[in-house]
Length: 308
Image 1 (cartoon, rainbow, N blue to C red):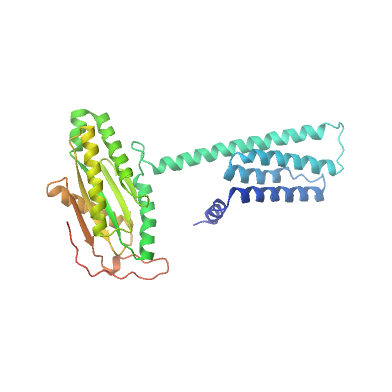
Image 2: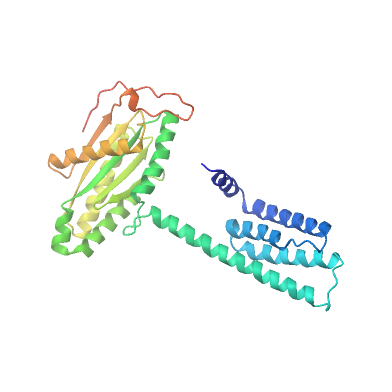
């Protein structure tokens, strides 16, 4: 993590009141330096610092800081003994600076909104509105790390829509898209607040269930299957759902490894008749197990792998 990322995270963790108060203190400091150095040295650009700071992190409050900075500059300029050929010139200069500060604030706010939009689009599936594979892997990896520290089990389920191609072939791609959206909505509505679901691509979805052992996973996935089946019936889609779920008591070194194992279980379901659920408790070799943040190796489980 770069120093800029650390600073950004630190500022975002602060309240809006603290950020605005820091900007006002910074404005006062710039004004004091401007006053003591005299009018011959220009400090105009330094008044931009609090404007940029607040505009990026607090948005519209940047307009207020822009006005404050322009006002402070005017007071400092008038108190410096700077003489002008006309008494209205400093006020004109102040209005020009304030307009410039306001313009910078507006541009920064729009850039920030665009950046946030792009970040959101990069993490959300464009068709269904569900989390995409990139976002899912990032979020799941954090949850696996928490599992390693707490030594609690988790379940990763891989879901594939059976006979989805027939929907596209017989009813058209628009109807297939409607089915995918319904599946994504159903998954998001069927999981707990701590769980995450995502569309991995095509007709494949995934669900991560933290703090969930085999028995709890069975209940959760039965509920998910029931809701998915009901959604398919309401949409009049002749589809089923092959679900492979891997239960981990010892977290793998990489989330991709867990996803691969769940994917293999899902394909085992497809090869054995489709439209059912298989849940396996996975036993990892010691070399495959993730270390927690303190470098302590999580011990491997001795239980036998079982399926249902």
